[in-house]
Image (cartoon, rainbow, N blue to C red):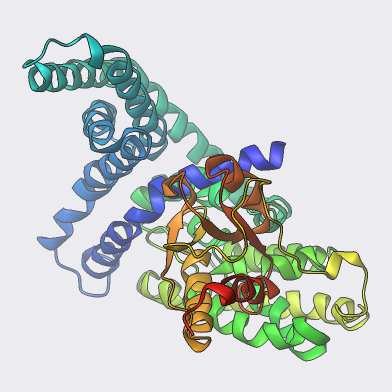
Length: 455
């Protein structure tokens, strides 16, 4: 229950941040290039850095949070409300935007739900505009006078505490919580909800932050997948090379999570690698200038500050080597999936008794994940190629869980999301996958669609 709630919170946070990652990268590149310590120092262009981090990015997060709850109207009110918090302090208001955005959207939704039937005919537009304006004004004043200063002080206090922990040498121990949380698919809550706001506050003062490196570091995943590639057996050995390439270069870390879950002892290797990588980052004063997403080696290189690339690469390499060294004997001594225990079986799970018959042909197949921009993109591409090879003409789209329609007919998702998918779309047939590259769930989809495929 706790895990499911954390995944839901993490998914919503990702839904606010991930669509705006391009803006974060734009700000990070401007910072890395034009700040006085950047690659191409330019005092005039560097004036873009502070307005973007203090105003643009929090407003975009707030708007996105409100839109997720109540569409464009929720987003409009959320942006106005977030502006009140932004104007109240010089601290980057990411935590405030993540709270105020959804709250403003929810309040607008409640007002619309209760008042729409009471508005006289012909006054709908007037009522809609004034209700949004009045609510936005009220929340902006509340944010400016109370919420903004409080969240700003809280953010500053958290950033100061994080710096003290880093200075004292205790930061590597955070690997225990990060690596354990990642394989439970609450990586979005950890990265976007905790580490990113701390990193932004530190980067504003120091020009870079080690907190951007801790969760998205691809080194541990590389070490684990190399261990499976060289010492694994059966399906895991065959899946590891493809997962390794996508993980390291594409930055989709969810691909290696099932490899840990099918052999929980490998979590020790992930923690050891994360600890070693963080220790190197701290010792070499490594850091990035902006939020590191997706967790690709290309993103790490692009967001490294001038003169700071070597420490970043050393930490990533250390995480990979230590993880591989610990994981290799564990993987080598594990039984092959085909001959192993029940935990190695990959199955599909129809989520509802009211699901349509297997021969029913859906208008669209949805592949969903928390944010709709990571593992679902990979899974949808793999499934799309399999359908094309089988000459089954059914479109495959990827989507965030929060944007999945209730009338969806056929949905593919990671196993940990199957129950939530069934709640949102109770009549859909749900296929749960553990392996995004070679899951038997894809063959199950083909078998169910074959009777309806054109001959």
